[in-house]
Image (cartoon, rainbow, N blue to C red):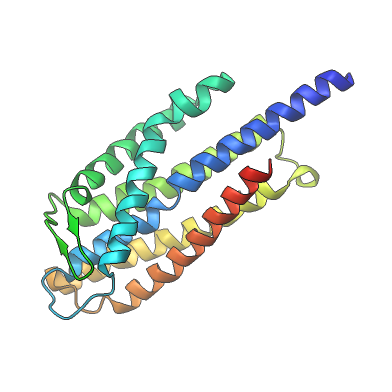
Length: 228
């Protein structure tokens, strides 16, 4: 391979890396954000409980909105310039998570958040299915599949070629597995406790830890993208 062709290939791979960073830094955090919204919903009728503060709810709502926009614009804004087309299965998954995020954002965007309270929170339908299954688990699966797809595009599947992008993708996968477990526990606890949301403190603490990990990962993704 000539040096010019190699340089062009390397430049395109770095550009695809940045695209992956941009997309995952916005979509991946919606998994934890959805669980935070679910916890808020569970605690709505349980006076005195506030495992998700108004500020945390506002941040979750912002993450959900950013993730929805990124998912909605993925194929047109992010991939079209690279002439990249998602496989049919991945494209179908994108439609599903975009729809789920739109439904959840439709709920959180109607809320008014002050320093002391969240007002106007009016959930509709099965919030456990929406937050746990459609968003948290759906986005986890999609993020892993998208990362694998990008690695395949840039020939980074070989162990000796894996760089920081691969490490980030692996970390996202690890967080995804924990989120799936927490989401399942949340559904079980919700069924046991009812709308009052009793016994949700442990799960809420786990979500807070996940939120911190996602924040750190998002910073890593952003820093990496800026460097490149």
